[in-house]
Image 1 (cartoon, rainbow, N blue to C red):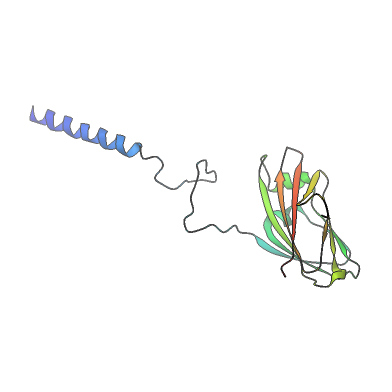
Image 2: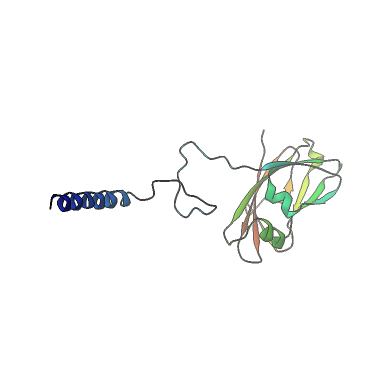
Length: 170
C-alpha cells in the first residue's frame, strides 16, 4: 500500500510540474528556417548582405542574383553625362529571393562619383512598379555622391514594387 501511495504522489507531482511548465509558452529557440512566433533580439539585429562594386560606362542591367546577394551597390560611372542602371525583372527577383507575397529585400545604391555630371538614372525592370518617396519634385535620378535606398516588395506572383528614397549624405 505504501508503494502505491508514494507512486501516486510522484505521478501527481509530475503532472502538476508538467502543467506549470507547459503554461509558460515557448521557452527555447526556434529551430529551422521558419520562425512563426514574434521574436525579440535584445542584443540587436544586423541584416547581412554583401557589397557589389559596379563600374559602368553608360548603362548596366543588374541581375536578380546581384540584388538578392548584396545590400550595398557602389556605382562608379565613367560617363560624362550620366549613366543608366536598370533593375532586374520582377519575375527573376520573385524566382531568386522573393518567394512569397509580402517578402522584401532592401538595397542601398551609392553613386560614388561626387560630380554633378555623374547623375545616374534608375529604370525599373519588366513587371516592376517604381514608387518614389514624394509625389511632386521626385525623379528617378541619383545625383552624384548620393544614396538611393530601394525596397523591393513582392506584391503578387508576377509583380514587384520598388520603393525609392534618395538621400544626400552631406
